[in-house]
Length: 382
Image (cartoon, rainbow, N blue to C red; front, side, top):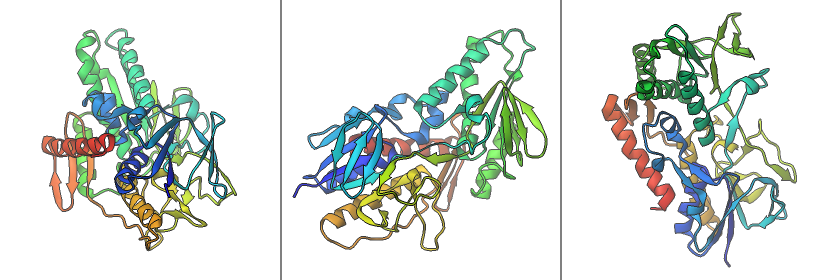
């Protein structure tokens, strides 16, 4: 019997699952559903903004994933009937499936902060990067006189916020020749982080490198500064202080994209709880991976929502789907930490690979080749 496998979401997890399943199940039919007409390799999104890597290594139209047994649907999945095995699309069409993989990712989480959504730029996808780049370059262009300043504030100093600060600095330096009358020393980039350190939770060596390079590049880092309000161009913090900025970027968290379920299932802050096999509790033909899933380890600790987790989820879910179809025993997921990259501007990266440390241009080259290899695997299936 030919299986019809639907994958909702064309991010890293969804695309990798598709490419892996095409090899494992060559006789199956696949449906890929996403409301964007392009795929973005999000681990390099900051480099798209800074123009440090060509977009051909980060962005491709989703139509390239069409194949003799793959249908690509550009629409939003609004509702899924898990019993009837039917997907209701925003374009009013319906899609039947035998097996479904939820990989529909996440969006920016403003945590209900008043006026944050109205007054901040997001940095979650390709369009966000383009809008922010355009805003920054236009703002530099409109600086009149050497004494006028441009203040850019990033709310959130996790890996994305930290890398984005360096990417913005790279972007400004790349284009400074176009603005000979502008004194770029009057352009400030500040990171406001709620915890006591940037890139909290990472290896102390990574944190130390990030802090050292931020100081070198004159990127201002304010730790223990939790934003509690934003009004126009003013950010208010929990400690009673405030800061003004011309451009405010929110990179302080994400929340899963939502889909309506019938019958209703319990969600944890929008995340889909899964068993360790990555299956939904009461529906063995339904899997959830990546940012939209609530995945726990053997000690009931929450796995982080990163591209590395999403890719490992994809490998595991594709194997378990093949086991399910062959009536074989499914295996529990176990995350293996393979390393961590943090881009620190000007083609410099702090990299941890197992017990090895790489810094500067060597770290960047290692990351560049590693990510190019992954990107080729994603878009070509090889």
